[in-house]
Amino acid sequence: MRKRKNMLAIALIHYPVLDKAGRIIGSSVTNLDIHDIARAARTFGADRYFVVTPYVEERRLVTEIVGHWRDGYGARYNPARGEALSLVRVADSLPSVLQEMAAEYGKSPLVVATSARLCEKGIDYQHLQRAMAEGRAALLLFGTAHGLAQEVIDQADCTLPPIQGAGYYNHLSVRSAVSIVLDRLLGAARE
Image (tube, rainbow, N blue to C red):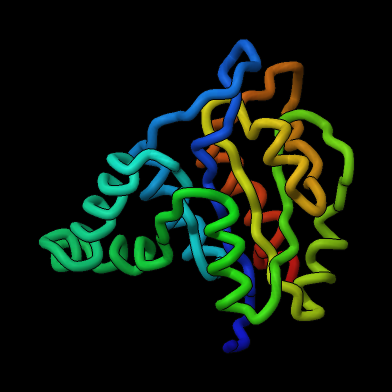
């Protein structure tokens, strides 16, 4: 187990997530999510970014995209992109991520769900920052489509408060939500 400044990982969950009617679905991996979340993770100092999907072809696609930018022509064309994408790991399930993190950090991480909906088991950013400052690894869960299914939220130890905008509309892209959460948690003003 090696000590890091931020023992923090992000998991982008593609199943089980919700559709606009609240039904459980599996969503497709998108190229923009892979790139933009990796860039945000690298910018703010996260250790890992897990793309979590049970679908074999989707995992293969992520591996090919990341490989292009880490090892292929993309690595020579844009080394900074490859550096960000070096954080990406592909996993088939949340339990797989938790197992890898426990092996990496020597203990299970604090699992923190995010949602546009107010959830029970809330934690504020200051408490999460303190837990991390005391050496606790953390895993932030983000959902694709219309958010994490309740069964995923139930597996979390706690949930961050929803990001609130200026009015009733509250449906950010997951890429935007990840950037906002990382800035609130690890941004320069927090140091």
